[in-house]
Length: 393
Image (cartoon, rainbow, N blue to C red; front, side, top):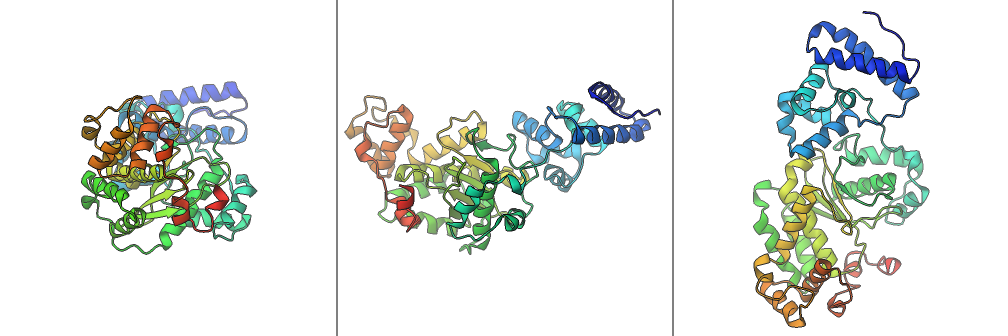
């Protein structure tokens, strides 16, 4: 075995080609050389190269999303459930056997499986304005304290790849990823400190539950009722205004004890937006709880973005169906020509307020002028963010 140092891009390409050929041999005879070559590649890329290939965790998660795989379905390639979890959270490096299995079984390129893990945004990259804004929301943290606050809040329940595109992030490309991470840490810190009425029971949270919760929107005190109901179901709802550089409406995640958490920013002070965003995040919990827990995933949502992610589309569809069943829409004229009577008829039959129906119509038809007088504005923040509502108007 003759090993040469990597001095330039040409050497790097040759070394990667040699590594790929050895991995393809599927023989333990070359394991020592494979380990040495992998180390040389990592050291060179760490010092000189810009890595274009996704790192191992990102590559695996991309293939999982593409094929609709659950973490449990990775066990034949990686090993036990615990080992899969350790790999996905960045706590365990891929072994040579794992690399071979993932390449042969899932077709993940060797270049991605042996790439060095990318670093997430450092605390130094979090803007001062994001930290200052967080401190207006009841926190008192300086930059040095942030470096402890974020990992402590996340409780290592998310992977080092938290902010990569492979995570389900329905957010604008201009989003400040460091500020987004800080926002999530703040939501989880509040959720961990919250005492819920009960422990979440996955088997008790169904589509029927979502429909029942949606009907509470018709009550005068519907928001209070739904928050109380969710506490009884073991689900935390944390209202946390967005930080500068982030553009989002809500998020779904879990705590260190796997209690579901819904984070809401109340970016738009509209009752219809509150109810749809809440039901969307609850739909993630209903449909994708195992992904949240086993996949260490967080769903971050900017509702203005039309997502092509299947799970986002599923959550959109279930949220809409929970608020206004499609069977009811079929009974009226649901088109650009819908009338006031159509809106009130749907409201009465779906048992949701007119503002929710009008908001749905506006969103469906991308017309925010028609029925604008039916939209309930400036009531949600006053209830859930007393003292802050005027600051965000």
